[in-house]
Amino acid sequence: MPLKPMLAAGVGLLVAGLIAFALVNVPPGDAQAEYGDVVINNYSDDAGMRPVVFPHWFHRIRFRCNVCHAELGFEFKAGGNDINMLKIFDGEFCGACHNSEIAWGVENCVLCHTGMPGMRTRVHHSTSDRLVAPPSAKGQ
Amino acid sequence: MKKSDRLTLFCVVALLVGTAALAMAGMAVTGLAGTKKPGGQAPVVSIAQADTVNSPKKKPSAANTFNRLMKKPASAPHASPVDDGIHDPENSGTHLLQWPTEAFQNLPGTNDGNRVDWVTALKEGAIAPRYELEDPDAEAFTMDLVIVREVKGSMPDVVYPHQEHTEWLDCTNCHDEIFVPAKGENQISMAAILLGQKCGVCHGKVAFPVTDCRRCHSKPKSVEQLRALAKRSAWPAKDSGPKKQ
Image 1 (cartoon, rainbow over the protein chains, first blue to last red):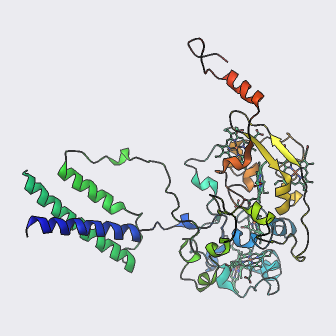
Image 2: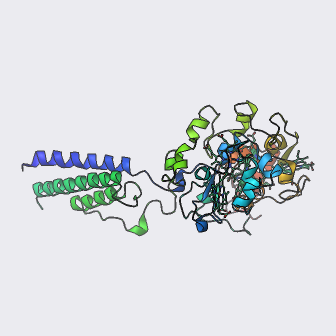
Image 3: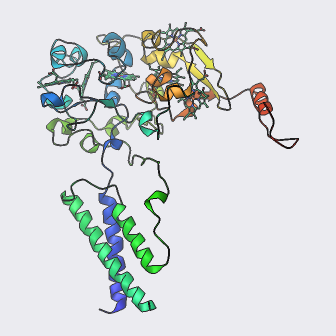
């Protein structure tokens, strides 16, 4: 094969390959989660259900923090409320609204239990996720 | 090596790399590649190989990369639930969820967090979240009291507005568990905030992130404060040698 066409073919393929590679390889993982999404997985995985994903952005368009964190008594801590299905059926926590009156009811398991299996309980995209090293409690 | 030899070698490498990159892209599309590698890794290595063929430059060792600790910035904001990495696309319900891009399209923006200016959205009536669960018309119990906290050093002072907070929150959300309600009686530092304490209970998690420095540090230092600051510094030094404090 003469040199010039080979060079053209080689460079062409290289460029095409690099472009295709760059397009396909969007980084995966939780870097894409919406700010404030809370994964709750104290019990779900062990019970064979997907973890729960709670979207703050969606709910705060409809309710102020006051409703959940004062009236309904949710503590400001991911996983810190010991929520389970019995409490939800009884109208506590998510069940205060997901009761087919204010919002769709608990029978819609697949709308709350939407998480990737195995994810740990936490709030996503927090500023502390970005720290290279966590600050020490003593450091000022 | 002769010049034409080197050129041939380059052509062959380019052909090989190009084919490999295309094949890998194809594999990733069809899901054959298994776990996706972070973008661009394979071609970067290949270019370095081509480099060593063309020039005597050595490939830098893994110990001497350019950014050692910097985390990869999130690419596009607001991924859809189907590909945000935390919702399981295999779950049928995932496909029924609303996309943030749809909900946010007419809301005032910021550069970080949800990229929504929630304070302005509420003020302008772009959203009308309920203050009470049962009563859609209940008014928020607000208080217009601004607390200015003088900040050590050069950063502008912190302005804490009760009005904007009590539009969303109840007094008991902060008093007395996070802050005792007395001006200046609470020890607050940036380290505590970054650890998720004090203002950091909400900021950096749900309310706008801590990286948005100027939204809290919004009151420029007064001339007197700046003079005091300048006095403490060794610049401009009139006499040589560092000043003792």
